[in-house]
Amino acid sequence: MKKWKVVVTDWEYEDLSYEKEVLHHDKIEFIPAQCRTEEEVIDACRSADALINQYAPISAKVIAALENCKVITRYGVGVNTIDLEAAAEKGICVANVPDYCKDEVADHALALLLSWTRKVTLANQYVKSGKWDFNLTKPIYRLRGRVLGLVGFGMIPQSLAEKVKPLGLQVIAYDPYVTEEVAEEKGVKLVTLDELCQQADIISVHAPLTKSTQGMISRGQFEQMKRDALIINTSRGPVIDEAALIEALSKGSIAGAALDVLEEEPIGSDHPLLSMENVILTPHVAWYSEESAVEMRSKAAMGVVDVLLHGEYPKYLVNKQVKNKVQLKDNQPKNRYAALVK
Image (tube, helix red, strand yellow):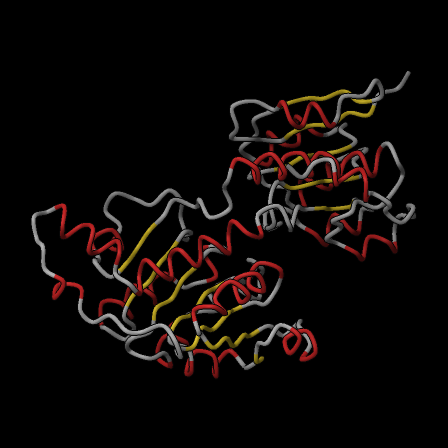
């Protein structure tokens, strides 16, 4: 009996037990790999029917070499490791897991917002160094009535907007793909990116990393921001031009930054952001909780099951143009996916 070959291109978990549980089927051969380069992916995946991907490059070159692949799923929300157009052209479905950490990332952005605006991290550092003096944390401003600007208004920033309502923050958002009706329903005003930079006291970045969003927050945007503005990033590091951010922080063009993601990760030991008191850094942890990690891994595997075992488009299909190349059934995974949410 022919078996579907499913390859995990790379992973950073202790094991692959959750993936194996979802993919445990007599028609599936499960193959773990640890690829880093295009060549390694091609060698491991040339004859695979499905890939589960974390960081390994799934470029146009890799996709051209795939002989049998029908679906590629990616751990997490971003799909910047995968050439979506090349996959669609070859009739390969690409899926992600956009909802596994909605609360976690929104909560982390809120935690960074509160920690920076209330100077919690800075005050902690002073107290532990023997300095008991609230004057060292000045200035601290009242949150109520201030303006939070959301760059991107998808699932996660919509959750954040809901969470900050009790704090009395006004919320505006920039997202060219969201309608006025959706924003109005959420009690948020849509503005241009320039208007957001000019009006917001706190800016929280939630845009996916694409060719059009890379470096979208750069020198021109920082020059428009208020001098007491805070910028938060829990999306992808390269959405912010890091050199321009460092320049803005050094010149005092903005007041501070709270970053969970950077252009290069992990951060280098001599990175200028490490020595800045007005910067909070966390190690790309916004997505994480015990529950979200299980949900992400299980749902990534379930996207493979949708295609190979049920002949359906994956629930979280990203490259929808693939429907012009391959005909599958519409997805009916309600009960299938519900069991994966812990």
